[in-house]
Length: 127
Image (cartoon, one colour):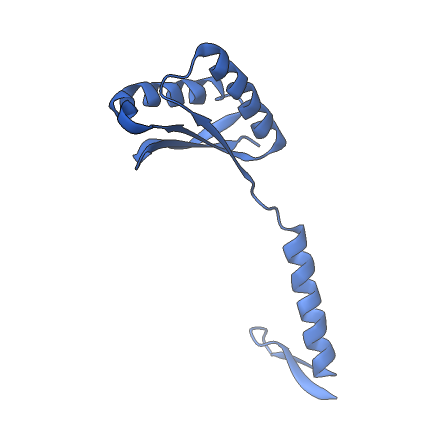
C-alpha cells in the first residue's frame, strides 16, 4: 500500500492510501475509454479537373453532399496536369460553385488556394 496524491490543486490536497500500480492501471484504462469515445474527424476528398463537364460535376457534387451528411469533412481539389495550369481561373470558379451549391449542408473552412498543382478548398459539415 502506498500514499498517493490524487489532486494537488485542491485545498487541502487530496491523498489516499491505495495500491499505486492498480491506481496507474485504472488511470490508463480511463484514458483509453476517453480516447475511444472522442470523435474522430474523417476527411473525404473529391478531385476535379479544370475542364470538368456539367454531368461529371453533378455526379461528384452528389457524392460531396453524401459525405457532408455523414458528418465527414470535404476536401475538394482541382488537379492541374501539364499545361492546364493556365486555367487557374476555371478551377477557382469550379470550387466556388461547389461551395455555393453545398452552402446549406456545410460551411467553407478555407477558400480556394493553389498549392503546387492543386487548388484546394475545405468544407466542414454544419451541425
